[in-house]
Structures are given as C-alpha cells and as structure tokens.
Amino acid sequence: MGKSDPTLLVKEKKERTYELPELENAENGVVMRIAPGPSGPLHIGHTRVAVLNDEYVKRYGGKLILRIEDTNPEKIDPAAYGMIPEDLEWLGVKVDEVYTQSDRFEIYYEHVVRLIEMGKVYVCTCEGDDWRNLKEKCRACPCRELPVEEQAERFNKMMNGEFGEGEAVAVVKTNLEHPNPAVRDFVALRIVEHPHPLTGDRYRVYPMMNFSVAVDDHLMGMTHVIRGKDHLNNTHRQEYIFDYFGWKKPVYYHYGLVNIPDTVLKTSIIRESIKNGEYSGWDDVRTGTVRALELRGIKPESLRRYWVEAGMKSVDIQFSWDNLYGMNRDIIDDVSNRYFFVQDPVRYDISGREGITGSAPVHPDHPERGERKYVVSGSNTIFISAEDSKEFSVKKMVRLKDLCNLKYGTPAEYDGNDLAILRQGAHAVQWVSRDSVKTTILMPDGSVAEGLAENAVLDEKSDIVQFERFGFVRLTERTPDSVKAVYTHR
RNA sequence: GCUCCCGUAGUGUAGCGGCCAAUCAUGGAGCCCUCUCGAGGCUUCGACUCGGGUUCAAAUCCCGACGGGAGCACCA
Image (cartoon, rainbow, N blue to C red; front, side):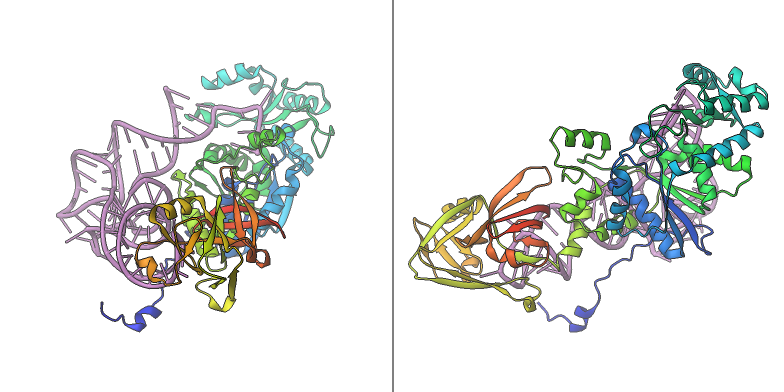
C-alpha cells in the first residue's frame, strides 16, 4: 500500500450536476402551471410535474401558476383545496398565482358562445353511443350541420335547464376525417346536475378539461406546458381551440409515464381504506402521497433531485424507491445523529464486573456534536436484539458496541474491553440498558417493529436519526417512557 | 381495430455520425477504513432490442420487424 498523495484527497468527488434540458423560446422568462384536480392530496406522481415546472420557472424567471381544475363536481374532495397548496409548499415549489376553475365558469361560457358563432362548436342531442359510433366511421351526427342560430339556441337551452343531464353536450368540431380517432370532435361542455362543493347548484353546465384548459392556458399567458404523455391527444385537441381563436400556442412537452411499484396512489382507493379504518389517513405510509413521504422522513430535496435527474424524456420509466432512498440518504446521513435501538429485546445480566461505563459519539463523523455516556451497574442488565442474541449463543462471544465484550452464559460474563475481539469474528452489536425507552417503529409495509431505544434519543433535537444497523427513522412522538417513529430507509 | 409516443446495464440517466472496447448515480459482489450491515475510499458485475440500409465511419441517420406504453370518456 503506497501512501496516497494528500492532494488527491482534496480532489472533489466528481459529482455530475444534473441539469434539465433547455426550454425552447424561454430566454425572456416563462409562465408555467401545475394543474391538479382536487380529488385528494398530491402524490409522488404529481411531484414530477410540480418540480419540473418549478425548476424551469426558477431558471428562466417568470411565474408559476397553480390552477385547481375542479370542473367535475362529482370528483371533488373539498379538503383537497387546502391540501394541495400545503403539499406544494412542503415540496418547496413556489407558486405565484392560484386560480380555481370553478370561479371561471362565466369565462368558459363566453368562449363557447364565440365558438358557436364561428361555427366551430355544435350542440349535440344524440345518444352518446350513436355519436361515438358515427365518429368512429368519420361521419357527422345530424346535430353537427345545423345552422349557427340553432346551435346558439340549443346552447341557451342547455344553460336554462331545458335539457337534463346527458341530453345535450357542446362539441368542438375538429376534423371528422382525422386518421387519429382520438382527435375527432370532442365534447367541450356537458350538463352535470350534481352539486358543486364550491358553487353549489348555481351552474349546471360544466366545461370538460380540454375546453377549460385551452381557454385558461391562453388567458393565463402560458408559454410552456409540461405534462404527461397520456395528455398527448388532449394537446392535439386543445390546439384546435387555439387555432380557432387564433391564439399563440404554448410550447408543449410530454414526459413519459411513471410506473410507481408497490405503492397505492389512487385517491379513491386510499379514501376508501381510510374510511374503513385500514389506513390511518392520507399520510398512511403504505400510500404514495406527499404527506406519507413527509411522514416517513423523505426530504423534498430528494424528490427534486430525483425528478431533475429523470428529466423530461418521453420514455416511460419505472420509479425506483432504491434510487430515491439513495438520494435521501445522501441528504440525511450527515445530519442524522446515531442512537441504539434494539428490536425484540433479549435480556442478559452481566457477571464478573461491578459497574461498566462507556461512551459513543453522537455522530461518528462529527465528534464535536458530543457523545452519549453509558453507565451499567447493579445486576448489569442489558438487552440486545433477538437476532443478535441468536448469534451470540452460537459464537459464544459478542461485543456490546462502545461498552465491553461478553462471553456467553447465564448470566453473560464480562470479557474485558479489548477491541481485538472484533478481529476474532465477534460482532459489535447495539444494546440498551434498563435505562431505555419503549419504542415502536412504523414500517413502510404498515407493520410495526417493537423494541427499546437508548434514553439519549429523548434529548435529540432533530426528528430524523439513525438507529445504528437498523436504519434511519423519523421520530414522531416522544414521551419519557415511549418513543414512536416511522422507518425511513436503510 | 385505428392513431400517437417510445426503445442505452436490475433501475434511472449521459452520449445524438468518428474522442464510445459507451457516462454518472442507484443496485449486486468484494476489499480498505470505521467499535453500525450507515458514511467515505477503492475494485468489480452489468446495457446501445433485432435485421437491413446510408457512410471511410452508426448507440447516434433512414427503413422494417419486434417489444413497451398511451389515447380513441358527457374523468382530469
């Protein structure tokens, strides 16, 4: 082993800086948006579009708009209006303006009327299935070719309540011959008789997402739109509206789909499980909500780094918890102080010594943070985990980390304090004395790990610590005789 | 069925005609260090979907096949 050149140690670990690709025509600033539907709180999937938009607005200057798309009264959770901004704030996404689409129905009505006058929208009273079947065959339904005056009158009837739910829809004409069936004529507004959580029964004609989005993206001056690739056809549809009005279109980007394994994301499922008591709430660790990630001790910076690294390619990707954990570990390792936690404790009394003392740094890389002092006396009772106890019984020796060595027996026998035992194959295991606190750790699968943690953890100022050889945990509740924590990752 | 998008290691990414016997991270294996199975250091495993073509030269361009995904909602 040659001596290494000390200057090499100074050499920065070559770390690639992850950078998003440039945006087209963004030199003079951008206006971008994040536009979730208020069906529940945000989940990991939403964090991608939020982070991407935020990153670009921060890079080029401009503004980021939060637009709550509540145009389907049947799929709204009123609580979401509050939860969404909270989630974004935790994520560190800076929103400049907030709009709620249910405040803007009059605006949408004005715009349909104009399109009707232009002959670009018709009001269809056909059976939905018939209309779709005709479209499939590139054929127009009878309503499509009615004169403009009649379309306007029909629309008034929609507004006046002369049509019931499902009896009439306003449809944007595109091109019935379009080779892509997904782009042929699409519904712009429909009648919904379900009361809206915010506007009650004041309105009954609701815009479809494609219509309100196109109108709002223009009115709000969007320069760039980043959305999932599942919206590709919606983009094509919305472009018809831009073209009819002669509006300048934003630059669109479509990133690939994200498959997030082993995670419940669907708000409807989560809501149901909360209702029947299976999940503890929107932050249940088994779900993929932003609130669950927060509870688990995932830092927003990790998510940001994750999505910046993933970029905006239109390839479909597999979300990797391992990768996210790796990034999170980078962030929390240095700030997380170390403590001992013993899962499924097994008791040992130690003979052959009156009192035993020891100490351990609170963080091995930061001696300046101080140390934990240990005193074991009386019957010299200590606990180690069931797993370590098993190994102890086989190897007949073990080292209690930062305290002393033990020879197997009942009671166990004090065996000095020589670290050489580690070279003989003994493991340094975490242990606690009687002076410890009952601890339960909520695991990502919803199970609970039980055990004892050393008392010093009660005085820790941070809520994120590492239980040595167990993993990082977020401390959620601490009383003098109990600690509750949530497992972050190894 | 029709239309669209996409195809680099287990995962994610870089590269976008020669500097690529392909980058970085994560992951696996191992060593060093450390009284943690963490961190750090080092080594190692591991990929251009396939087939044609264009070219002196292709992961990079073109065509085809195959594979994956999405849309064709009076959801967003």
